[in-house]
Length: 233
Ligand code: SAH
Image (cartoon, rainbow, N blue to C red; front, side):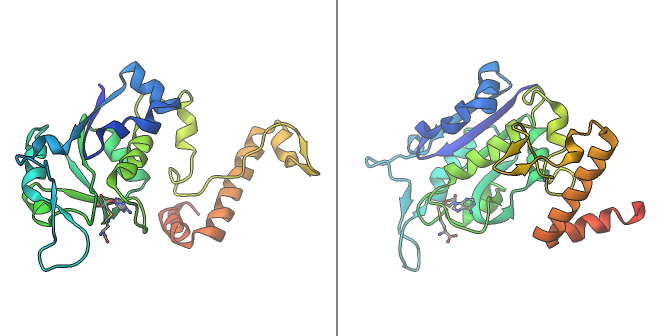
């Protein structure tokens, strides 16, 4: 079953952009996923095709109009989650990526200017999603981030299925350090254990490394992990 994304944007030509390359690009060619980038100005009714207007109450910038967004949303699909790219939303993370990756269709709305008229959020049940605590100038980049991480989870996209279940965040831990040839690089050797051929020891080493790097760098993830694994210790 293929995954389809509808993207409402003022810049449809930006898509598929970076998603046309590598893993996501091959998956697109194979039909594992597809998209429609829908041009918001096609839903305007005035001569100037304007999608925005001045903020009520004054202040800088422009706000995207609810009526135009509503028409673009109502063009369908109607029975799928609708995500509004927004710095005020819940933070996008790996578990939301997993949730989205099992859906058939999803709609993404890319904000521009100062954002969108608040009323569209309630009127069309939009789920606000943020890609982090910083501001980018438009929702398109946020959609690239989200789609990239979703597409790599679709069945048939990652060659090595195991490699995704071992990654940072999937286990609740950050990833262990990785090495490849040459065996010695500028006086730094690959840790002996990794070339020992002892798979059990390698696995144990990696787990310890994951735990210590998570503990050192991400106390938030570490306390969650400890709580979840309390019974096992
Ligand atoms: N005035 C807004 C920022 C608008 S940026 C504020 O202060 O919150 C313009 C658009 O870029 C937003 O409507 C949103 O769609 C997108 N955007 C900006 N930062 C984002 C983020 N961290 N996550 C998701 N989308 C973001």
